[in-house]
Length: 303
Image (cartoon, rainbow, N blue to C red; front, top):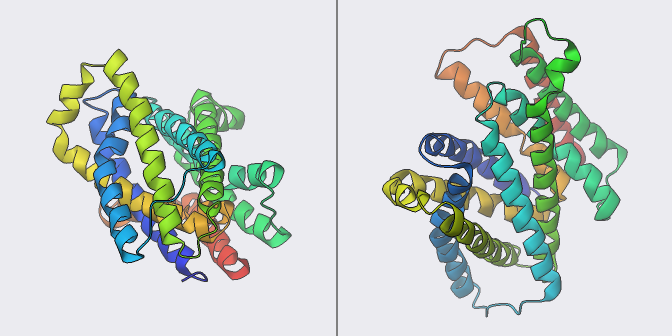
C-alpha cells in the first residue's frame, strides 16, 4: 500500500472533494459562509467517528495519549483549514470566482515552498519541476477561462479574487503540512489508524470552534442547517470520505506531492463539463489540461 496507496487515496479524495463542492455551492444559497463551513464538520463528524471506531476495533488498539506536540499541530491544521474553507466559499460570491479558485489550487506549489522553508520537507529538482509543470497548466487554463474585456494581463491574473484565492491556498498548505506532522508524531506503522485519529481530533476541534461562533453570532443559521439536513448529510459524508483519503495520503507521502497529484480534480471538473454538459474547450484550455496531466505523470515517475 505504501508505494502506490497514496496515489489511489488522493484520486479518491479529489473525486470526493469535487462532488462535495457542488453540495456546498447549493448551501451557500441558503446559509452564511461560516454556517456552510460548519455543516461540513458537524455533519461529517458521525462518519469520521464511525470510521475511527471501526479501526480501533479492527487493529485492537487503545485510544492514543494526547501530547502537546500532536494537539498543537492539530490546532494549527484545524484553524488553517477553517480559514481556507471560509475564503474558498467566500469566493463563490465574486463574479470572477474562477480566478480565485484557480489560484487556491496553487496550494501544491505553496505547500512545497512552505514545507521546504519551515517543515524540513525537502524536494529534489525533479519534484519541483513536476509540481511547477502542473501548476503552470492550471494558470494557463485560468488565462483562457477568464476573458476580461479591456483588461491587461496583470488585471486578468491579479485582482481581489486572486488575492483571496492565494490566501486560501496558503492556509490549505499550512493545514496539509500540519496534518502530516500530527499523524506522523505517533510513529504508528498501521498508517490508517493515526491518520483517522488525527482526522477525528481535528473535526472535533473544528466543530467546537465554529459551532460556538455560530451559536453566539449567527444563531438564526441553526434552523436552516437542520432544515437542509439532506444536503448537509451529503456534504458531511463526501467531506469525511475525502478527508480520510487526504489524511491517509499525507501520512504516506510528502504533502506537496499529494497536493500536486490532487490537482487531477481540476481535470475531473473540466471533463464533466465537456462530457455531460457538452461545453467546448478552446485550444488554450486543452494545452493547460495537457500540462496538468504531464506534471502529474512526471510526478508519479519521480516520486
